[in-house]
Image (tube, rainbow, N blue to C red; front, side):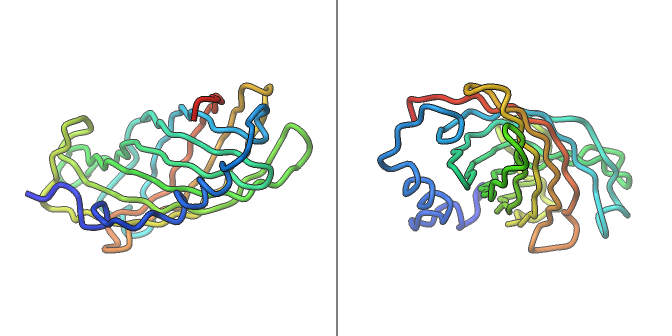
Length: 192
C-alpha cells in the first residue's frame, strides 16, 4: 500500500523551501525580527460548505512547526492532525496534515503585527489520530490550499504569541474543507 502520494516523492524542492534558504543565507539572527523559531500551539477545525452536511467540529489538537521570520516575510512548515466528527458513522475523522506556509508581515504598531498569506496542505485521512498512520480507505489523499490571516504579538526578543484563522479545502473533492482557528507560541532558536 502506498502511504504517501507521488507529490511526496518528487525530487524538485518546494517553493517555500527554496525561498526559506534564500532568505536565511548570510543572516545573523539575533532578534525575533530575523530568526528561526519553533512553533507550538493548539487549533480547532470547523467544517464549512459541503463538509457541514456530514461533519461537525471536534476536539482541540496540538500543532508543531518551524518558522522563519524576516523583516517582511514569515515562512514555515507545520505538521498536525485535523479532526472532524463524522455524523453519519458516529466516529471521528482524523487527517494528518503537513503544511507549507508563507505570510506577508505588516506592522500595525510595534510589537503587534498582522500576517496575511497562504498555505499548501498535504492531507492524509487516517483511521485514528496517532502514529503509525493508517489510511482511511473511503477518503482520498488530497493536496489542499488555504488562505490565512494571523495576528502576531512579540512579547520579547525571545518569544512571540499569535492567533490565526485559516480557510482551507482539499482540491480533489469537496468533502474535506473547513475553517481552522488557533493560538500559537513561537520560540526562537539559533542553531538552524
